[in-house]
Amino acid sequence: MAGNQKIKILYLMKILLENTDDEHGMTLEEITNALSSYGIDAERKTLYSDFETLRVFGIDIEQRKEKQVRYHVVSRTFELPELKLLVDAVQSSKFITHKKSIELINKLETLTSRSLARTLNRQVFVSGRIKTMNESIYYTVDYIHKALSANKKLSFHYFEWNEKKERVLRHDGRIYVVSPFALTWDDENYYMIAYDSHSESVRHYRVDKMLNIQVLDETRDGAEMFRDFDMAAYAKKTFGMFGGTEDTVTLRCKNHLAGIIIDRFGSDLFFSTVDDGHFEVRVKVVTSPLFLTWVMNFGTDMQIVSPNNVKDKLVTLAKDVIAQYESDKLL
Image (cartoon, rainbow, N blue to C red):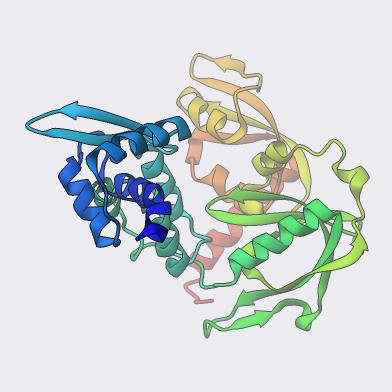
């Protein structure tokens, strides 16, 4: 049919992309049979011309003499290792729901041949992972990006889970109105960094705990707060995105913890040698309970040297925990 002939080259491209790769090719007979399944007749001499047209278009088609001549698409926008990396990122992302993870991975599989897609499928282990239950997170992220690009404020409800595994709106259901400035991924969660005009401070919100989000027709506030804002520095000093007071803390560590410090705070820190077995380092941190318990994780291998108010916070926290167990009383 003449109409089908006009789209023959599109079906040819589809067939080659779906069925061939560097290791798997198709003969002319297999290609003509595949075209025939779409109601398209093709002669060999016209296929040669079509192959050349697709090459000019940018499809990397190679002709190889094996037992028979086979045609392969040998390179693509995404190579297999890159797709595996993306699949790993999707399946390990806590803020993407189980359903959306499967949908995204299925779409990623269409970016390679069917044979190679099966190798991607074999490495998918989404079912056992901890995932958010907020199915609207995709739309929430989209609204945040719209507000960022339009320089507008956002409104939303914010919730937490209770002991019955029910969503409970925070602040008695009050609508939050903030000026968004950034999105960041920390400790497997996705956060929006925003300016709160009411408290005149920078705040962060778990994206998967935001509901009923709307872009407002109000220009953002707080631009001066973010003019020199360093997102990387903010994430490094804010443990688990828990709030608290910011302090410059001196830590004394055994030498084997150097890698731990660099992984957490970066390599642009000055290590001061104390003796053959220890070094000291000054870091800016938000001294939340999460930071204090992070220090406790290393036992006697890490010590807060200063300031005294942060040392006192850690001592108080440790005493409270010990007292709880010594009292033999349940919470």
